[in-house]
Length: 124
Image (cartoon, rainbow, N blue to C red; front, side, top):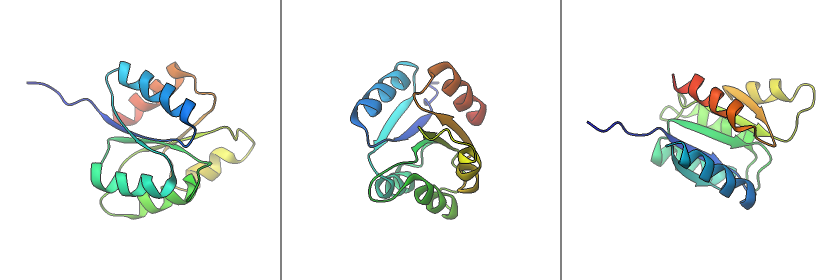
């Protein structure tokens, strides 16, 4: 029996970051789907029901904080773990992300071993 690889929704508006991160996750066996703004992330989360969401917080159309709030307030998507990805590593930013509904928080530039540890921790 083949086990399905965990599906990760990567929400990132920067093309270079998106390509690099999606390739690195795919190489590690994840099924990666991509959204380029917060509004698109909500739609894709509802249709694809990913196992986990990596959410950039500074996004066009709808920012990551509001997108996360909407994903976490919808019955179909409320249990999907969300890891905030942000270049904002200021005091209080982690709390702001957790308050918006994120399950964890990681800073950019992404350190792959650290991010993978957080992903595995949330996927169990």
